[in-house]
Image 1 (cartoon, helix red, strand yellow):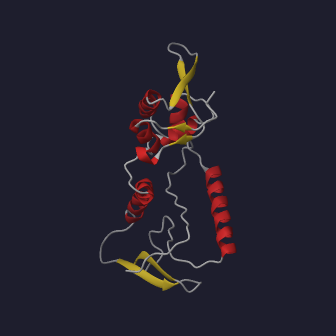
Image 2 (tube, one colour; image 1 turned 90 degrees about the vertical axis):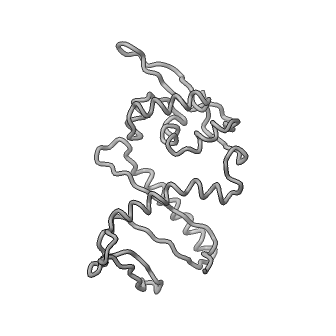
Image 3 (cartoon, helix red, strand yellow; image 1 turned 180 degrees about the vertical axis):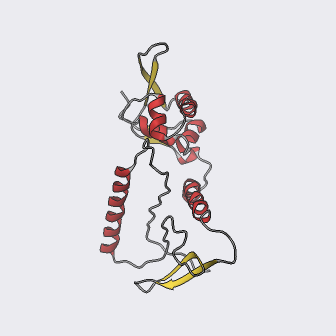
Length: 212
């Protein structure tokens, strides 16, 4: 059974694997339950070969363990499980000198992928425009569009802006974002043939963008 105590990374290799997004899906499957490589591959939409490679690295680092075997004709199937339900990585084992640097490193892959996915829906030519209009709440809204077709290419949704909110509204916003995240998590279908990989970012904090 996994330990009730948090697993605290002791080596740079443990820290690197725990913070590597490529290993996160397999680790998520194994926290709190056991699974085979083929079962993990089905849930995470990775090849069995990829999953085997990542499981080998995680086992070697002591982050997961082989907990048993499932009999079958020929070689038995290994079953894996996380060694703890909670993992901790001391900041000293990361390359970040500040919390801001750490956050930037963790968020960069998602934000970069979002920008690439949105940019792929547009041709960079004279038909592209940056459209600036007032929305229904009298805030300036800027978006990419094609001349004569302001809603063209909108496959996704994105919104970043400043807002001034009362404390009660801030608490309500946090609650709604948590509810939305729970709803999205409940809709996930990792092994479904019609499921589409999506990039989701729910970001909120009291603060303000500095004017240049």
